[in-house]
Amino acid sequence: GEKAIKAASYHSASKYLECGISFLGTNCWNDSYDLSLGLYSHSVIVQHALGETELMMMRVNTVLEKARSYYDKLDTMYILIQFYSLGAHSLSKSLEQSFLVLEQLGETFPTVLEPSIIGKELLEVKTLLNQYTPKSICEIQPMNNKYKIKAMNFLMGSVITCYQLKSPHHAMLCCRMVRLTLEWGMHENSGFGIGNFAMSFSTAFRDIAEGYMIGKYVQACTTRLTMPQCYWILYGGIKIWKEPMQAILPELLKAYTAGMNESGSITNALSISMLYVYRAFFSGSKLLRLSKETASFMHMYSLYQRQTMRIANTPISNAMAALVGFDDPRMKKYIRGNEDCDQILTKSLAVNEITVAETVIVCKLMVSFIFRDMTKAEKIARKHLPFLDTQQGGPLQFINIYKYFYGGLIAFHLIRSNEHEDPYWLDFGLRAIEKFKAWTSECEWNFQNSYLLLQAEHHFATNDVENAKSMYKLAISSSKDHRFIHEEALSCECASIFYNSLDEEEISKRLVKRAIECYESWGAQEKANALRNSSPLSSTRGPSPPITACSWEDESPRQPASQGRIRRRSDLAAAAILPLGGIPPRQVSGGVVQHIDRQD
Image (cartoon, rainbow, N blue to C red; front, side):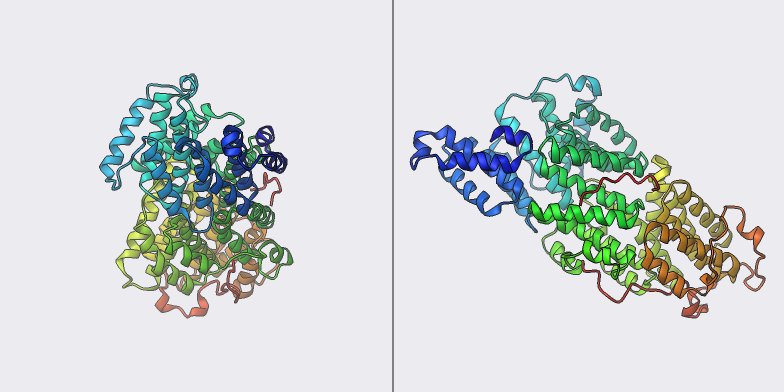
């Protein structure tokens, strides 16, 4: 059974272990205590991995009843807490139980955390870590204190839960993992702890570069067996701020494969698949291919009873279906069984599962804005963005990027539509620009085009015509150079609306055509059709000429009627705002193919 577990052959392990249990006598916990504990404890691990919840709980109850010491119960309690964290809406219960166990293991934490306490702890741990280099930290002897080894396992699970809940305890927990590593020895979860420390440090002190440097310790600690948990944080949480997003995707798939096939870390592997889907979607990977992969992952979540993972990926799956088209027979197959996102949002907010709630909100903002359903986008933004502004605990997360991107775009639309709009929206838009300015200074490849488009929309909203023209051109060029085909489409479409407001229809027409081509290349056929059908400027067939940063006005005469003044919303009939297509009149109701998209 143990050998089968190490080989990640859980079905075989289950057969061996259950066979062994069947041979135990009625008085086995007295006559053969160690053997009974081993068989039952390992059965708990295996049945959890296989998603056999009923049998797992039977074994859990037996161990908790029969085990002679608290230590003997720890492995089973760890699986039970992990089960809580992966079940639907049980994160808070999982974290509460983890803290109780950690307290028994001598690892206590304050109930209330002030920012000053967190900052002090981060700086102290950073000082300790600076005594080592990435090379020398690997020379630390393995951890051998059995209680500290167990504590590291519970700390890792708690760090993941705090990340999902956006809890400020995240920083304190990963600091403790680093302290235990430096004081007691290297553990298989040490790299994961150091990586989360890097994220917390860079968030608290707004120092992405330093967090990236700390990530080098994680790289040094990574082995084939620890790859899933180390790459989870290294590529999913650290390198995205410094390295091209498209280059990160193959590394995440590599870690997924290692977790499923080699290290036997199914939970970590499936967690990585979630990170992969999010990053592939928002970086513009081909939608049909990614939808197929996502459907395969969703099947795995159901197979292994990882309900929280399935729920977290559903908003992405549903957003892809909206963009490709719900009537596409392939998408009907891929989203079969997906939950309704409104229900997911309601339940997530009820149990304070902020990360899932934020994902639903961001996907709704994105789809509404892309389809130019500005009434819906405005409603979502007004209802949810002020709330999300209050949820700032824990480290900076990937989904935050797109909260600010689409939230900022919608904010500038609100300002443009109403001169007397609430100052909150101007503040939000300007904060979004500042965020992307800082991120662009760290990685132009990932963030520059979004930064430029936000600036263009700001200039459009404030009637700064010449700067708006410049920024739209640069945004389109940057999106193309950095291979974000979906954001090239978005930039072209936003620029077409701007030029149409100046009555420069020839330029606007070319931009609409290019936007349609980009949407189709991305796979967003429903959006491309909506734009083609709604825009009178897209009627001419055939590929559009190349759009360059210097050619628009040279090739199209300026319309004197506009005299460089942007027509505000009050000056325009609704039919003049492009495009008019909305989301299809059905609600967003809601694998694994190896993916290295060379075209993305």
